[in-house]
Length: 79
Image (cartoon, rainbow, N blue to C red; front, top):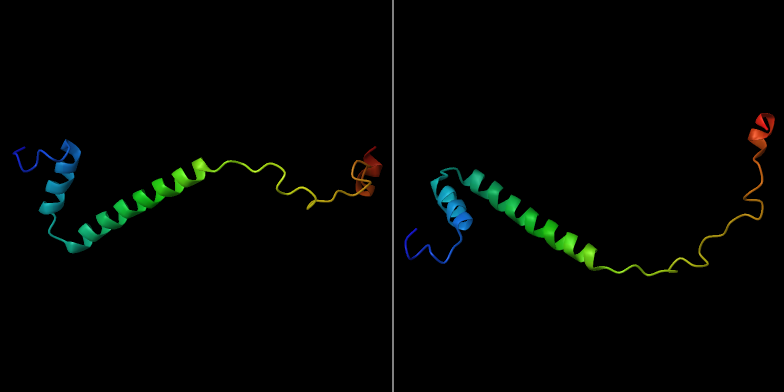
């Protein structure tokens, strides 16, 4: 690497040089789309990972029948 590329890491330099060699604009666009996808995926994963659970947020929203633990009519013949 020369002095103009010393500001980039080895991988950045290799990606840049490989991109310069591509002739098809479609391939360059596809690579750019993939890079954007990775960035968005990372941002989404980080945002989800930073959320703290809010315990009790559904309290009172779910009701259980009084006979929840009673055997079901459909299974009486097996008991």
